[in-house]
Length: 245
Image (cartoon, rainbow, N blue to C red; front, side):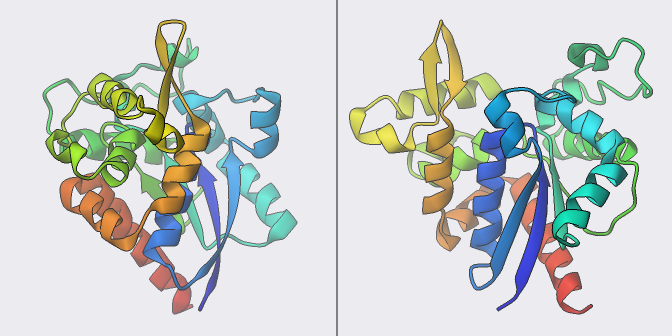
């Protein structure tokens, strides 16, 4: 049994819950200490964050990552793995969407609708790498196509999810998760609810989803989603590297 420290930078708290569940499932015999580098529990509690939430928050944290890691590791020790998450839909976004009127970079959007999933994600990963201001072999990109919810839905509703391919649009994924969570019996697995005419995420549902993930269910995800398999491979590689140090 090994003990690892894992730092996570993600768009939001539901992504962090999913990533923690995935990591613990891939390495069930090991012990993990997770550190939410961004957003932090305090930032979520206050609903206030200097860098902002969503992918804009990931972008700004990555631009200052050396300092963020120095502070986090100075408190409780070096990380064995640092997961940086952004959803693939960011590939179609613009820096103006996050209020960057005079961005340092000119690399978004980096894909067009109709591009292959792997091409979209590869292009976005290059963008992500350009944001990061520090070189660390422990950094592990996590780029679900089109969003984390596609993976979570696959392990939460494996039978009903057969027709949701990796190319499925985000609104289709969200709408289907909302419909699947409507029955009272599905309350604990509910990931989406409706408020004011829009769908919002149920954080408790993601925590519950992470807790029921099994090796077999994760194998279903990696068999159906290439980006999940890539993330799985990268996690195994970085953890193996830590073991042989």
